[in-house]
Length: 379
Figure 1 (cartoon, rainbow, N blue to C red):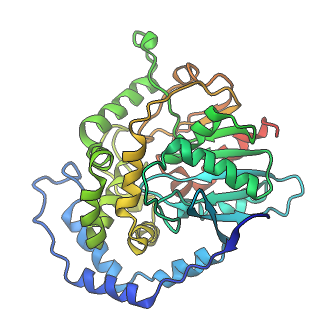
Figure 2: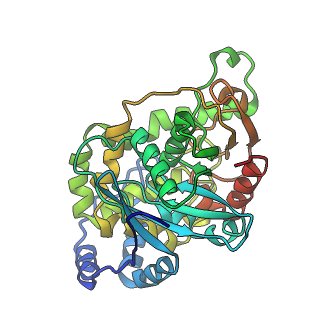
């Protein structure tokens, strides 16, 4: 490795954990919702259960130890510290790949897939600017195109001249933009949230899967996208509450792990039914929340929406593309919709299970999809 690359160890001061305990102890809850499901948001009873568990049983040091068992680094790109995991495979034929998370996820989403994926790939897993242990931009400009270029710089700095890219959520947007920019380093991409609009020419011949995708997008538009409007328009304002209340931060995040995951909903468009702990452990949910709380990134993570929502660039992607569309993904275009702008799709799969946080929710499925997508791509 060359350049300004420094090993990094996670070491949260005990006073921060003591402060968290004090705040949890004096939480003021709202009254109970007036429905018997999640239609008004995350239910009071579940928030109280999680809060009690957080206070009495949750162990951050367990998580910290596990994350420090991975090789953590930081490097400065365009004046900002970028945190990343870098695992070099023992496989002489391994190929490099950069994997990017989104909101309200983190690099921790990939903790359970690093070991199997490192059998085939050299792994680079960064934290987005303003997320996790990466630096927080103090000037406007860190939008998706800038991050995509920064990832190109990161991979070059690590000595990888040719590599693959993978991502979901904002990570899918970054990965898609890497494909659009085509700066010469990235040989192919795989996304588990495919960015493509429904094709109007198909509206009279929709498949059942396309009908389900439209229903899912309709539910998101009508019932679930308030957070993104707030992030994109007034991230600073919501940031005060997220910075001050750990329970507020937790509820803001865990609600999405319910609505966007394959956790027992009756239909792919439903916001009711199911439970996040059907697919995520309580500790795993709180581990991810802790990366937001301990680093105080409620505002800085939300600000990515403010930086990027004005960018509606859907230029064509001509490098090889792999797409995986799980049934509980919030945006699930069909292959024929995606082909309108992705001109070289070499892998496509629509599994019967899974949702938005695929690596964390269905680790084995995620690993198989990544392997299959890049199997036919060459560096």
